[in-house]
Each structure stands twice: as C-alpha cells, then as structure tokens.
Image 1 (spheres, rainbow, N blue to C red):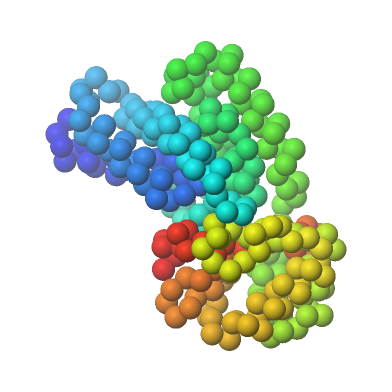
Image 2 (cartoon, rainbow, N blue to C red; image 1 turned 60 degrees about the vertical axis):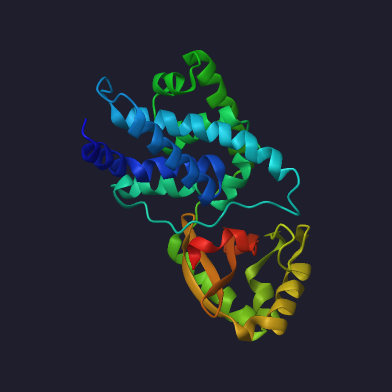
Length: 292
C-alpha cells in the first residue's frame, strides 16, 4: 500500500479512532497522543496482509489506550478535587449516519457516563466502549483484547451493570434541556436568586473540576440552597466581565463562559423532571484549549 493511500485510509478512520480513544481516556490530549501513535504503527507496519484496515486501526488504538489509561489513572490519584472529562464539542459527522446511532454515541460520551466509566477497570472500559458505543461483536473485541470470547462477555456484563446502576435513568428532550439551560443562564447572570431556585431540584449537586488551578469548590456542593448561593456569589463577583455561549458539548447543551476570547469555564446539567439534578462545572485551564 503506497504511503499516500495509507494516509488516506488512516484519515478516513481518524474520527472513529478519536472516538474510541477519548471515551477510553476522557482527555483530548491523551486521545490525540494515542491516535498519533496508532498512525506511526500503521505507517511502519507491513500493510500488505491487512485485509481490514479499520479493524487493525481500532485494535491498535484500543490497546494503546488501555496502556495509557493505566498510566493516567495513577496520575489521577494526585488530582486535586473531583475529576471530570475534558469537554468535547460534539460533531459526530459521518460516524453517526442516523438519529438513533447519533443518540447512542452522544449518550456514551456524556459527562454522566464518562464519570462512571472512570470507575471501571481498563479492560472493562475498553469492552464497554467498543460494544456499547460502537457496536463491535464480542468475537472482534476478544481478538482486539487477546482474550477469550466468554471472558469478554463477562467483562461486558459486569461493565454494563456497573454503568446502568450509576447512569441517569431518564431521557430529556434536547429542546427542553436547551430551554432550561437558557433560563438558568438568564437567572444566574441577572442575580435572580428566586428564579434560580425554581430551576434546581431540592437535592441538586454541583461537581466542579479545577485540579486546584482555578477558584471553585474542591468538594461536591449539595442542596438547592447551597448551590444557588454559590452561583449567586459567582455572578456577583465576576459574571459581568464574561460573555456566554450556549453550545453542544459531550452530546448535550452546555454553557461556555469566555473571558475575552479565552475559555473560562463550562457548565452542563443532568435534568430530571424539568429540574437541574446535577451540575458539572469545569474550570481547569488544562481542559479548555479545544474550546478556544
């Protein structure tokens, strides 16, 4: 296979490879490193006997991502405060040709699911991503992981049970989520504490990710009263200096706050029965570059 054809084949599958790597690692820089290493191995491989380039590339990416995940999990033990995935602008393009498949991909990359995936072992996470997000058959996953198919099925069942027990058990209409997000933004920026309270579930929680590199709570805040007071304080201290955009991140509508042209923070919500049940706040500057 000529070099230019090899490049063309790789670029054709780059979106899928990034999708696998990001779901495995939760950080774009780590995912890009893994995909780049996959390219180097593809470029240097004997490609003549390869009958299914996509399978070869996904297999290589998955194995590299497992190795990288084991490394980053050790680093995350020293992370300051809660860890959340790096926000990703959602554009599935040709990866999801229809609405149903796009919904599956969006769900598998949501903040709520990505947080749960952090609690899986690297092998469980790989099986879950390949099976649930991309629909790979067990036999192919077994080949990718160099495990027997019965063992892979057990990993899949264990991972699925773990995720289902902890993921949100609801589906929210995108228009409803956008409307609630815009109402939240209006109330928060105008200092409308009463209006803000009406949007929050009584047992709402706020999870913030900074790694100690920006001001935000280092522990989860719980209850509508405490969360609203925190947000009201944030609005009073600095909201006037920021501009806001509503956009789609990780398969759902989110708010991006900008300080000039520099991303300052990201808000996204889990919604239950028309109220904000969980709020995610990301202020770690290391997780903002792709949003600039």
